[in-house]
Length: 98
Image (cartoon, rainbow, N blue to C red; front, top):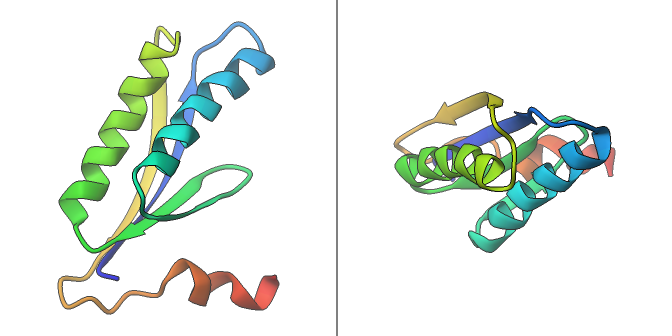
């Protein structure tokens, strides 16, 4: 792995139920991308070989939230990028807690 991002999507919505529905749409998109990911309580982590692809996924997550009905969406995005491919994977970071 050469890159990893964690993204938290915060859609503007009228209810918690609506927030969850919109976030579920975003997570469904992430699942469809075919990359390794892990959903957490506050953010979803995605890892891959192509940093640009991960950033494109992050941008599309915001667009999906808007298309799903949020008039405005905020996001917190964390990223790690190492061109030589030596980052810690999701599994390496979390396996001792499973």
